[in-house]
Image 1 (cartoon, one colour):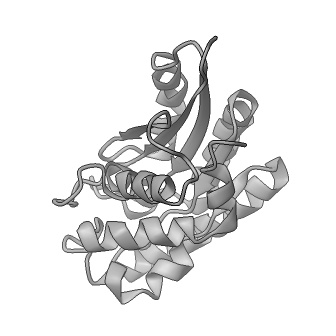
Image 2 (cartoon, rainbow, N blue to C red):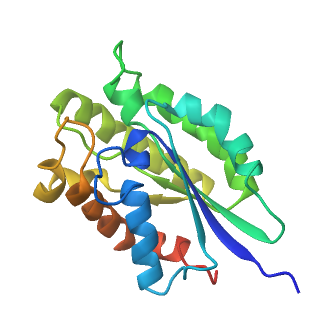
Image 3 (tube, rainbow, N blue to C red):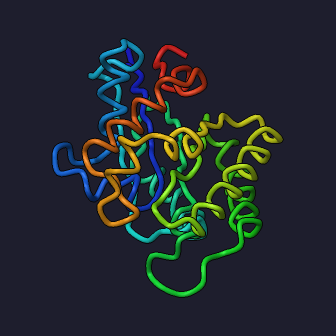
Length: 206
């Protein structure tokens, strides 16, 4: 008898990677996995979680790598689910240069989802806020566009920007203006699992 292995693949940038979380490597992704396990949604084992965040990766970068990174990790009996949290690199340009236009980043996500949503159940998480007001204006606009795209494609969408922008635990923990530490990552994980669409997505029984 072949046992199934539910697996969640989280694609994103350095915020997904959790670079500033010195308490739990993997940042909010690891914390979300633990919370989902504790809630009985995705018991470990057999639930498997892959953090595929990479520093300074934009939406275009994710579009070029997600399929190959997924396929090289699939094993017989694995039931994959895809999570994308993208946009901060596009809108804040942490590597220098000009930030992308929200419409361009949204169009790239739309193209990505056209393929991803046909491969496995997919969840999109809005880009979280940063310290810079101008970047936040672009991030907020991109989040709205992402939500519209997901609605049109019947893809689950979790809005965290608005909530976290008004949450001191998160905003006060952005020591470098971009990345949350342990406190902020905890708050993001809690904010996500409080949303019904995320709880449903994290349920291994579905």
